[in-house]
Image 1 (cartoon, rainbow, N blue to C red):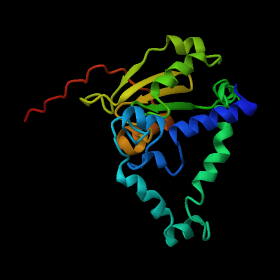
Image 2: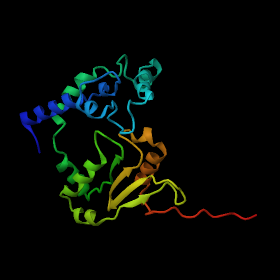
Image 3: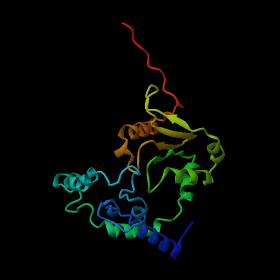
Image 4: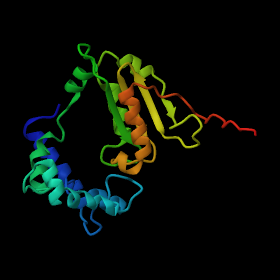
Length: 221
């Protein structure tokens, strides 16, 4: 675990290099001078396939700031975001703090048992699927040996779907999913796949291994 002054210093360095911000200055096509942009020419750290963030990303704040929406949320005259730069500064000290101990507590809980889902967008830049794949085998929980032996299922929305939705591992109450063709904002990039993943998690349905789609039955008159 990284802590203390070194934690803040490293987090501040990463923030400076990437210009990560709640309000997304890294998304702007006019923003230059951050490391990610300088080595890739890209401005959207949520999805490798985007040069700039989709314009609909800018719809969220105006929607929330409508008087009727603010009234429904009971937030008075508060506007969103009120001060994203200040919010980010308060989070800097947490950027490099390990969450392993808390994750192990959840994974090993038996009374009550907790279902746990960790998912990644295949095209995510800021929290890449490869980083999660490298991290999970190092988590010291009671199901680690079983996790290492678990096969990765090829996931399709339906057995006859010609498109691969992603890949999943399941061990007890723990599920790990990589959502294909999605970035950091999985529901925005792949809404159908995100919904199927969440429904499987809530309903306790497994991921069937389908490297090839099942043939579609031909209905004869």
